Image (tube, rainbow, N blue to C red; front, top):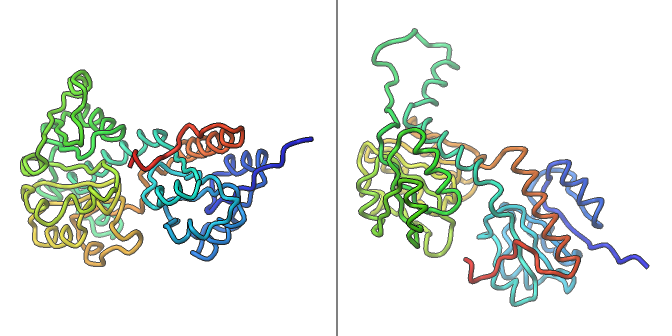
Length: 328
């Protein structure tokens, strides 16, 4: 007698190849449209499924997990970050949580460098001039940006993505500095030609570019607060492809408006889609719609990780990418 197939609910549209493979392996419920589930829809899904496949747009907090049915045994997150999931409450309820680490490292690092270049070379302003039809031709002093080669880059968070950013920055001739919870091993530090700063304040005050590459945790919330942003040099820029909550967005907006910070490149925001309207108006800011990891190759690799985590769990083993509270 064949084993009953797991009931899997997916909260957002995924690449077609991923959805097809999920359908082949499990009793899967897919989305007809790509809008985020409401809280009520999420609750209903968690009561009917053995496995939930959520994304960063789904806030799965303690009350939702507490209301989940007895069937729910695995939350196989489609994404590396799990700050939208109450992992501790899930564990108390006997629900495993897995994620998809590692597959988006290069894509996110590429976008970090793209933002650094876009901000320092004023690319959006140039695009706006061309799209307006008001370009008067080349001029020696028009839209002067800055050269990235020789600039000091301070990386906040030197995990997989931070190290990938460092390798790219070195290729552009930047001097790499970093702050991390733990100092890198000597051989990795040597390979990256990276200078470690135990004091984040001291690093921030000396850098030409700050790149946020750390996760959002209680200890990193507003790590770049008004005081620390105020330590940045007036001609420095900051880019963030990690989590919006790491930067105090209102303080950043004020300093960008006043010229205390030269520019910013942001792919993530403190309040999700609710972006400070004053931030949108600034010419010295590049805003992207959370597309740092948006490559087809990366999205399919994420789906493959989800599939492996679910299949391994279905076979009675620990998912290879299980997340436990001690990791956060």
